[in-house]
Image (cartoon, rainbow, N blue to C red):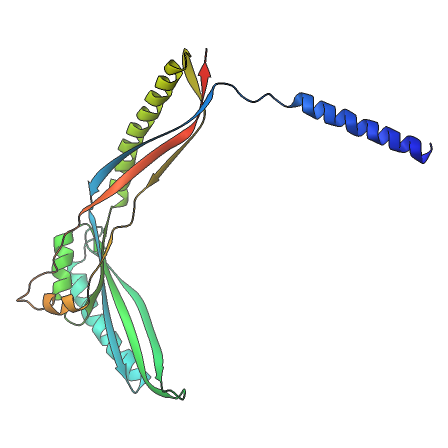
Length: 236
């Protein structure tokens, strides 16, 4: 077989494949509508988290580390007396130690920080506990939804969003003169913005004393939103 004959056969095969591929392509769907529906509800936050922190510095690294450990141990001793699983949970957080240097790069001393985390559903107990710890200060306070409350709320809101999606699909089908619809593809997504409330460390110095009482608590609400999106096929 000559080279030119081979080229003609190859070109013919390529054209035949292109024609077959073009013929096999399905025509674009008709009567397909993209829709989105959502539902949202504001839920009272039922979780509180408090980060207690302490900072120490000095010329000797071992002494600074020992001072941090002493402050953390005292805080943990107080916190463990109030701990109740799910209601008041206690754990240690970050523990860092780093040198302080002069302009010339020489080590002039050491500084360290340590954290203890309080979290749970019993907000009054956590607030009171934070007020009783005198060896550490409040670094951060946050509020949110427990997993159980979030899942239950998302299930309820999902049902509302799906019902709105189906009602909207039925309205569009009727408006365009179709007898009904079928769902082609659908996506359900949920989101909850974070609800962290920062606080000044100085606020804890007042809350730590018995006269000042527990840490003030105002959890607020969190929006739980579920969105349903996708496409539906209108039916004659």
